[in-house]
Image (cartoon, rainbow, N blue to C red):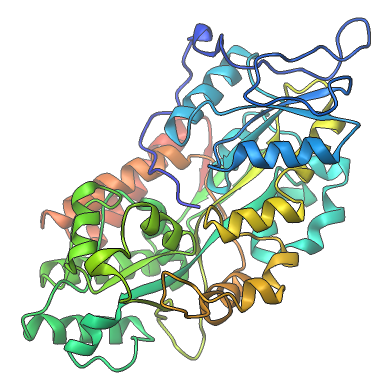
Amino acid sequence: MKRNALVASIAAIALAGLLAACSGGGSGTDAKGTSPKLTSCSNKYVYPKAPQVSVWGWYPNMKLVVDNFNKLHKDVQICWNNVGQGGDEYTKVQTAISAKKGLPDVVMLEADHLATYEIQGALVDISKYGANKVKGNFSEGAWNDVSGAGGAVYAAPVDGGPLAMIYRTDVFKKYGITTPPTTWDEYAADAKKVKDAGGPLFGDFGANVPALTMALQIQKGANPFTYDAAKKTIKINLNDQPSKDVLDYWAGLVKDKLVGTADQFTTDYISGVVSGKYATYVSAAWAPGYLTGAGVGKGSSSGVWAVAPLPQWDASSPVQTNWGGSAFAVTSQATDKKLAAEVALGIYADPASLKDGWTNQVIFPLNQSILKSSAFLDNKSAFFSGQTANKDVYVPAENAYKGINYSPLTVYFYAQLQAQSALINQGKITGSQAADAVQASLEKYAQSQGFTVQK
């Protein structure tokens, strides 16, 4: 599912009052050994006498998901609140961590932010509470994204974003592109062909999607971060050759005016997508739902979309990567961590919730019970004019995905990569120069945060 690009600081904020209206942590038992009643919930209990676990989550169908869980569990009930998405939620999370109070028992987090809170001791290793019993329900990459050193598991995965290339069939047909590009070299050649014929931009290099840029660098072979939370050591590889190659590639497309430089998820960008300003859209499996919700695929932009696998650097050795995806983590402020783990592992895991999620394009599910089902595989996408996109593109990409070593400095890293990408788009620096600048900045920042930077 698509997440907002995060540029807000995660520095500690001493604003305890900010969380006054939110459910507090530690909802397991009170001093008398009984379950305190959480009343500030956005849902109603099905079994009000059962112990309750507080949850923060932002999925659009979250109320349905919570109701489904509560109907199925007489032993525990969820008290749910939506405190915001992206930076809004993360600010509240960081505030509560700093204040050592105010976190819910279970919190929905994006996979690329787990490490940030893991190193602060804010998350519980739920492998101690049966997480590995459901490991087989997920791909290797999906499980690796929520796991840590020594077999630790810090969240239960729900949805992901295997990357692919969405394209306009009308533009391809008009300019004689008979098959989608399978390599990035072919992508650049097709882009030039369309431009030379007076056609639209072939794609877009938005500075405000650093997570996508990082994913494309990883596809080329980059391994941006390796860290040891216990020893507080980190190895940063943001200006290795694969990282530079990807930034230089897109910088070249920008310089030759083959792709645009608009910030994605803006009104202007969506207007361009609708009007045919861009021939392709490199994005994740949640994109069809996002685009549909934004009005794409209607009117003049209906019936023109298709999807193909992500172009490769080496077609003989394909690499799949991912952008986005969320999971439910148990916080260290939860009083009854075992009960909270039951919720984290069980929420959005029942068949009814998963079906609602994928059929209404709320999520791209990671649970193999869905990914292997004929209903999901054979689904004919309305957005893609009846194409079996799941079977053809997204499920193979998800199952081949191996996972990412995310940074414990995610927000700062994304902010630096975004700033340097903007300079690329302004023609002020090369891709290689941008990579060097991000590397230097992250090394300095990591040291300021108490990390020993390994060479």
